[in-house]
Figure: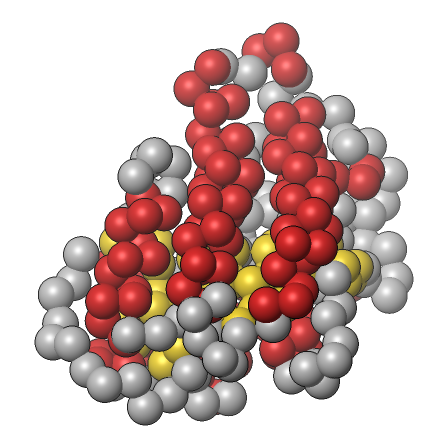
Length: 249
């Protein structure tokens, strides 16, 4: 982890997991442009450095934390590091996710199964719980935004564990909102369809020009954050206007 001097928080603070590229990077940049200081978490320093550069924030306002959310103690370590540096936490975006290539359930290894569940469900729940503890002490409340996937609803073959994890994240968001709403904490889940990122391999039957862009997800995050205090968009489903899939099962 990068060590920096503690600073007095002059801005609201957002923590974004999986901030090194793609959707996480787009969200981080949008938050920086809206005036947030950032805690940027991922596994690759070079990618996080690039996100910091694109954000335009100085190191004191853009803390880099190298972390693997599959590790059991990672959520505690990440929240503690962010809070120690900034002294507050206003927004948590649980963007990090992981899945292997489509794999039949009977061929899915135990190690991959555990990592799918850890990164996509266990860590977001733990991070949300720890963030809510901090946010509940702040008079300004906060927002916790989880990134799920349309796989939770489509339930495609070869993605059983991933679909289950994302479906669990959707259910968790609704239940946690019911618990935390009176504390001024927003809980929201974004459920996007196909997004044009490096995570989706090239396919001749897939029209990438029709897919969602990382910036579309970032815009949804900002819409949730900027919603009136009396409103919480608990669930936001984003799909491409035109279907980019051509006969893909």
